[in-house]
Length: 237
Image (cartoon, rainbow, N blue to C red):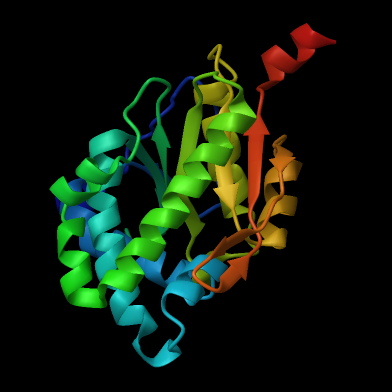
């Protein structure tokens, strides 16, 4: 049995599976960073921050691939993965939760996990722009939470091959039910596309900040969104 099939177990057996036919729940390991980085690079290729960091589409994918591989080392250090696989065992959807109380992505953590190479690989300007955006996003997200810990959702993507099949809403809806609804803490996220805002709103997230981000002459939209959880919302009514 290969390493992919080892992870195709039901992750949350107390909840009935709601994934579309042909997909199974999974978790990711560090051994799959290369495959996950390819998926993230495809999914974020036209995302406004990434397009701003790497304006040349001819070289963007290669640069994104390195960035996503490095980012995934941080994701595994800070959080835990959830995913879905297709019938061939390929990653069809994925995301990470950073639990309440987990460390934030400080500059030292970025450096320890390989980001020290970024100025040499992609230039000091790109490195500084990425770090400035990370700082702004964290400041705004924490301000929206008003000091509360949260489940921080990172790198939630669906393969472009499977978008429009309700896979993303099934995977994330199940995670929200299991992780957040049973927890005293909300969930939080950042997104830069209006269509993503609509996707998350359907699952119960609410926009708490919609200020644009401007760094080094470029500007892009950004939304901070919070999910309070069904049980917590009902208690507030």
